[in-house]
Length: 110
Image (cartoon, rainbow, N blue to C red; front, side, top):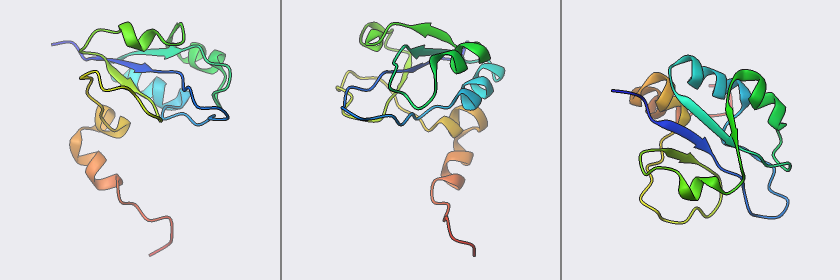
């Protein structure tokens, strides 16, 4: 069974620069056997060439709407309900236990 495609969508909110996926994490996903598509979007905190350099496929902004239903769409804000599945990136790399273990990490020292 092949792994699903991870598709990083462009954001539509003004002044939104955050990204749920970094080039380093994209590389980790690629190394784990996933195919990673990144929408071309100039406002993202990471430059598109950083994703290109690690081997991600660069696709047009808004192309997530036409992605196959099996693809996992990553985004931050108001993604329309289209039946897509959303998973924490850590889960995709390390399995479901890693997402549970890391989801409540405190920023203060214990």
